[in-house]
Image (cartoon, rainbow, N blue to C red; front, side, top):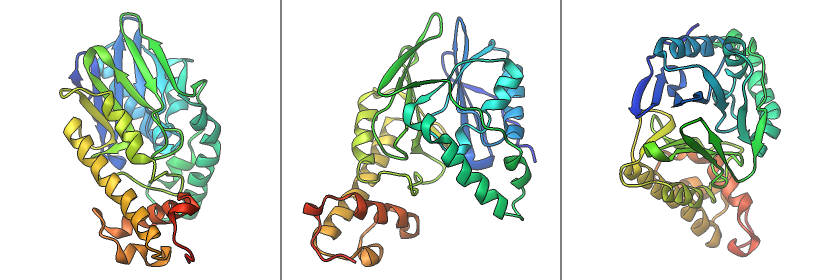
Length: 287
């Protein structure tokens, strides 16, 4: 079940973004004199073949490197396809993401094994993992010939292994799933909701008022959008802290809190927030 074909659109000098209907995923190409760097590779081998065709159609140069923004499957299940289509190349990720991709992918494969009616079940299960080859812990600079690109781990948020990609000369920042436009950012079982706001503070510090921001999912946004999303994440974190400090049990927190999003989206956030709070910030007993 191939994804809807998407053309890459230039959002800044030699920075192209393609938005795909399935999961509203964004794939970005950053061009340099030495070739193209691809940021994220989509959610299956079959979907990635469409992306590869779009790269050829763009005709902006050879694909010479890949970045995976974190360990979730929809951002790296296309790695093997890109290597098959364009040859061996460095694949960059944080150390945490590299070390946890196989476990994370195992959860995805198990889910799709059970999802017998899902229209994309077979294509996801047919995907072969290809792990990142180059890792870093804090920050690293990539040389694209006539352009430098920065990979930065700003802290824990969507996962413990998120990175953002900064293209300084074009004033572009690729936020991975620390920033989402198509829906509120997904707070899952491996997220860090209490730390996410301060992580976004660091991300925002990398921006100017004119920065083009590419989220992991959805349309291209700007600094104001990220600041608004950071404010919402901050409300979630502070609401959890407030409820716990007043002795509201975790089981009642979703009902009693005033949340900026649908509480149904915040079950993991509340559970993890209560777990991550130090004992000094809780009024016991909590159940």
